[in-house]
Amino acid sequence: MLSPNSITRQLSDQISLAKAFVVIAKESNNLQFAWELSAQIRNSQVLLSSAATRRAPLTTRESETAIRDMALLLFQAQQLHYDSATMIMRLKAKIQVLDEQMGIVNEKSSKYGQIAAEEIPKGLYCIGIRLTTEWFGNPNLQRKKNERMQIQTKLRDSNLYHFCVFSDNILATSVVVNSTALNSKNPDMVVFHLVTDEINYIAMKAWFAMNTFRGVTVEVQKFEDFKWLNASYVPVLKQLQDSETQSYYFSGHNDDGRTPIKFRNPKYLSMLNHLRFYIPEVFPALKKVVFLDDDVVVQKDLSGLFSVDLNSNVNGAVETCMETFHRYHKYLNYSHPLIREHFDPDACGWAFGMNVFDLVEWRKRNVTEIYHYWQEKNVDRTLWKLGTLPPGLLTFYGLTEPLDPSWHVLGLGYTNVDPHLIEKGAVLHFNGNSKPWLKIGMEKYKPLWEKHVDYSHPLLQQCNFH
Image (cartoon, rainbow, N blue to C red; front, side, top):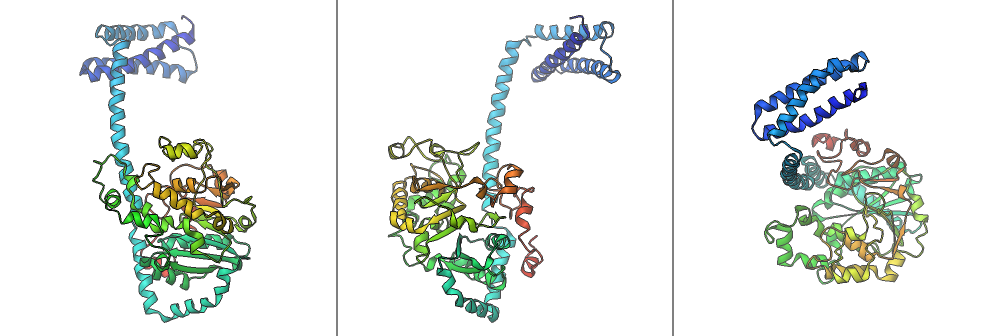
């Protein structure tokens, strides 16, 4: 203990213990003793700092007083019952209180984040109104759309690259189309099939009539025109008519707030969200299609996806069971016998957002009816709680072909992603609440999305979108 290193270590250990006693003294309202401890801590720190500055070890003589004075204070702390057992009990109590406070803060943060994510920015709302006005006030736009009717044969040509996007967000959809076109080696062979709702239909048509995307063919439809889409055929539409379901998603008063707000988001009953399970009905003439979510950015040519061998499977998708991502048991309720009996809990999950669908195999295996079966079994929400991925995992179980992970990089809307993965990724997915068009979007990833938005466009300027 007389060596220079031991003196330094002894002072450091005394400082650490004294800092803990300062906390306890303050909690015990013994402010005078807390002040004395703090003053002695500073003295000892000055000694250590001085020795470090002059690059010479502390001597026994210069540190003796500081060590003795601190030892007296630490002894006094023990006399005040600031012993280890007391300290541990108090720290445990403190940790418990902090955990409770953290839980409350996290719950509020989650709630406000969800609300912010569901909000439609004023700029997007403005763009929709102005586009609708422009459509009805500008005959040239409708004439351009009529001219494009001549390309109907392209919409059914199986030799072309067909992509589909189901969205009510005009600007996000535009980014998907624009980024795909810019990175395509043969944009004239790319066909986009867009489906929106009646509210955004005219605005969506206007936007894609007034803008060109390197010769890419764009078709816009609204799901309300699909005659087969009715409550007698579609379980989600049937559930929307149920009063208990409406209360669960739209009022939130039937379980005293026990269910987290994210499980009550009405978007999970949106027909645009569930339309992915009806792709063969939406596009009866197509044999293969690449499905893209509206929160993705394309940065590589995607034509290679159409030559990927799915080995007689229906769905080509990137698996997400590596690292922090999840397996089946993270999405489904394995206490339910139906789930437990039919699905391996350690089966590898995969992602929606960039999927290759073989529609010939889909029709042959009647996949939509598999989806109907599970959706109807979950009317009481006991099989799963949230979204379209859980029913997707059930529907395409044993029918999914893993794709190379570089085709689809996830996480840009909620977490940090390895820059090397982003650089190599063909499709970047902003899944999560922090969408790039929202104020809560992750700033470091926004440029990847924003570079595909022409902020000089007159409409965006008029709507103050920047």
